Image (cartoon, rainbow over the protein chains, first blue to last red):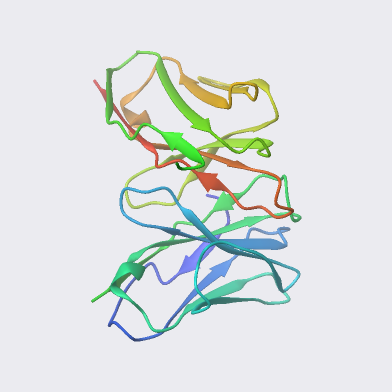
Length: 113
Length: 112
C-alpha cells in the first residue's frame, strides 16, 4: 500500500458531461501529480500541484483542470468529456518539486460513452 | 520518435529464469530513472529508483542506468509466476517539476 487513495474507483459518464476525481496523498507528501493511462499505453503526465499551485503541465487541453487543498489532497476535473478521455486516471504523490520518489494510487477508471 | 522507447512484449519465460527488461530514451536531461510494476487494472508500484548512471540492487531486482548510451535495464533473478505483470520504465529531469515520462510497458509472463 502506498498510502495514496483515489475515488471513485470506477465511473461511467456521457460525452459532454463533467467529472471530478479525488485523491488523498501519502502522509508527509506535499506534491500531487495526475496522469492519464489509456489501455496498452504508459501513463501520460497531466499536471502537478505543489503548495496548492499548478507548477507543471503536460500536453492536455484547458478542460483538464485541478485543485490542491491545504491538506495536500487534490481533485482532477475534466469538462466536456470526449470518448477519448476514457482511461485510467492515476494520482501520484511525492515530497518536493523534483527528484524524489513518486508513489501512485490505484487509479480511477473512467469510461465515456 | 517517442522520448522513451520500450518493447511492449509480451515476454514469456519459465519460472526461475533471469529476465532482462530494457528502455532507451532520447532526452539527455533525464537524471532520475524508475521501474514500476503494474498488475492488471491496478496502479503502478515503484520497484526501483536510480539517480544518474550506475547499478542498484534490491533483492532479486537489479537496475542499471547507462546515461552515455541512454539505456536502462531491469534484471529479475529467479523469476516467479507472481512476477507476471507489466513493467514500466519511467524517467524525469530537466523540467523543474516531477514530470515522469513513461515507456509503453513490457508485459511479462512467467510460467510455472
